[in-house]
Amino acid sequence: MSNKKISIIYILFFIIPYIVCLLVVGIAYNALVLHALTWRVVIGGIIGAFGMFAVKVIAQRPVLIMYRSTKQKFLKSLINFFILERSRWVIGFNLLIDFFLSIGSIYLVANIFTISQIIGRTLGWLVLILIVSLTLASYLEFETLSIYTGKKKK
Image (cartoon, rainbow, N blue to C red):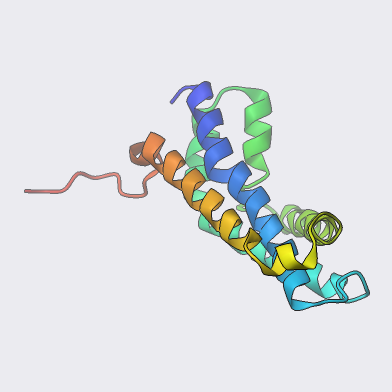
């Protein structure tokens, strides 16, 4: 798999869904808690961090395949962010980054969108973006990223 193809798949399969999931955390929190910018945002950040961690766990196999396939240092370091099969310190640091990004997302959503937009249709648009992005990435390289490596017997 070429570095260009890995970059496109990485953007469609991980970067866009990661950003969308962070925005889902921000929208969900702001839709549930009207006084979002108080001490309760810490709880939202903790829940968001563990939710983002769960999203990363699901994507481990394709991430490892892309990490092993690329030769470009910068791309390897970007992909390395999603690899969770390392020391507890790295996993803890990853959770800490997700915690702060979740809090940032909560504040960003609260300051950009109105309450009617938050409660209205923004979540639907994010889910649509997520589905389109994952569908395109899967279409581009399903065989390489698939966990099923053997061919079916007839």
